[in-house]
Amino acid sequence: MKKTIYTLLMSAALACGCMSCDVLDRYPHDAVSRDNVSEEDLSLLFTGLYCYSQYKPTFTGYFQNDMAGGDFTRGGGSSYATPQLWIRDCILPTNGWSSTPWVGYYAWLYQVNEFIYAASKAEQTDSVREMLGVAYYFRGLIYYNLTSKYGNVQILRQATNEQIPNSPASDCWAFCEENLDLAIKMCPKFTSKNYVSQQAAKALMARAKLGQGKKAEAAVLAEEVIADPAFDLADFDQIFRGEENSEEIFTYSNNVEENGINFAGEFYQPATTYVPTREMIDLFVSADKRMNISIMVDGDETVLNKYNNLTSTNPIPVSRLAEMYLISAEGKGLKEGLGRLNQLRAKRGLPAVSPKTEDEFLDAILAERRLEFLGEGFRWFDLVRTGKFVETMGMEEKYTIFPIPQTQIDLNSKLVQNELWK
Image (tube, rainbow, N blue to C red; front, side):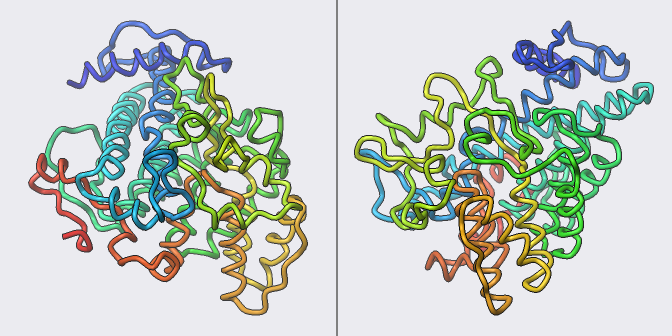
């Protein structure tokens, strides 16, 4: 099993052979022993990590938060009258919307853990150390997603097929931070939006801190990224139409040669499987420079317009500078953070806002995040982490966490269902 996993990683690396980055231009070779790898071997395995990381969550994993957050519903012939009806029908322990991402994250984690083991055994050159830093970033990203969605999950520090019990969510968040700390120390400096960098690790750590309510710490990290001369806010057509820009901190290239996920096939005619709700559509005003890139009329539907490549694939943004502006604003609070919120609004063509209280300020930030990140996987957890899901959605508390898939509980007697779903 341990040796087989390298064959799988090599196969994944082959799929990335067409990418235009130095490391990702490499071609894999035969499987090697996990205890005896050269730097050349690791470089080829490293290519496989990038491929696995972008497609293993599947479309369901990327879009889970948008659907469960109530900004979208089903379109076409399988439409639901309200998002709440869709959520009650699909967010279940037995449904793929809960099980598919879980399986994908842990399959990805298995590969990352195997790489970390092998790289830790190799000579610790600067190159190997940087590759390890990227692997720790990926493990931090996996645990951010698992913990923010499922809460009490299994902590796996090494690849194993043994039955492992859940750990408390607090321990899972700590493990996420542990990996991102290592990534910040070991990752290379930013060179390209398609590579993991030290700055990308800081951006993800800021997101993880905010998710735990560590607002001051999140704001400090966000400000460090904002101050970095490599980045600046950009227009939406530059970000979502593949133009050069300085806003994207880390983006999966998601080339079709890499088993890419075709988001556009889910949003445009004739399928229009998932469509923004009328409430969401009506939030955009004509002055908002994001509007035409975010939504458009396509036949008899108004659709998400960020991912528009029907014949191929679109890049998948993971972190961009606008998030850092809004994390900094929220982390600092009304008095010190309002400026960051209004700077972003000005870039998007909108007037400044003047909330009077901290509660009004938080509502303004959440409203801005809703417009800024439509279809990018933020809405559900934004409502959950701020304690606004139940009131906003008018739904039961159990939907503030995803159920652990029943198939996984059936396979692992030590795995326990989340309390709200028992």
